[in-house]
Image 1 (cartoon, rainbow, N blue to C red):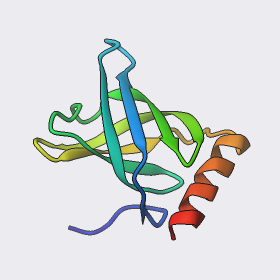
Image 2 (image 1 turned 45 degrees about the vertical axis):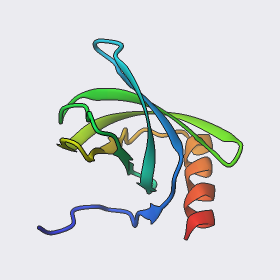
Image 3 (image 1 turned 120 degrees about the horizontal axis):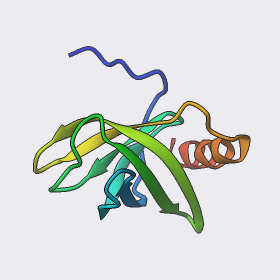
Length: 103
């Protein structure tokens, strides 16, 4: 399967709280990799693909909230999320720090 990602993902473990926007359902998990445009979240009960979510990440003493859409889900393993394209410069700066620190 070809890799369709626009940005390189780096291994990065961050605490992730994922909230489904429509239902308010929350789950706590962790990321296993991260880029400027998305992340993979390890969880036994992934959210279905195409679900719009709010992801709250905590890493290295910083926190970041990002709107995203679940791109794919692997039951029992996790899910891939793509962040909204309209990230603020402040959000991108935090992502850039985290990616640079992990790379």
